[in-house]
Length: 113
Image (cartoon, rainbow, N blue to C red; front, side, top):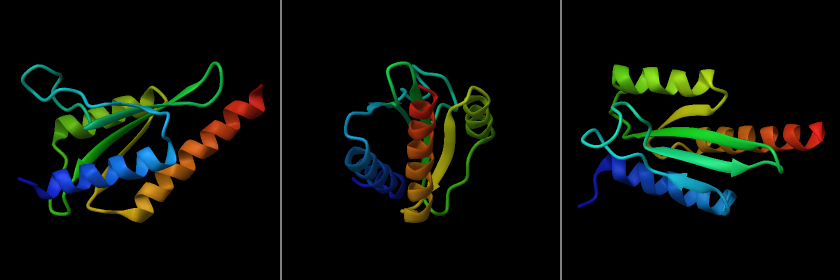
């Protein structure tokens, strides 16, 4: 059975797989065995020999809101230097913003070398 949120998750996974096929995708376990508030996806994208970009993505259907725990966890990821965001529905514009930010960070890492 496909839920509105699972459709958003498939949308995110398809884009990320196309754009960053070598990225490592991790889906933290839910509440029972994991930490409450963790985002749906953590992506690890190699920028250069020393730098990995982390993207923490929370998927939500158009009519869903973040919980306080989810919002706080995304802020924690941002304070650690990760890209952290919510993709609500099949938001092509937000996904393009994510792609562009990852590519910008890859360019920056390679310029430092």
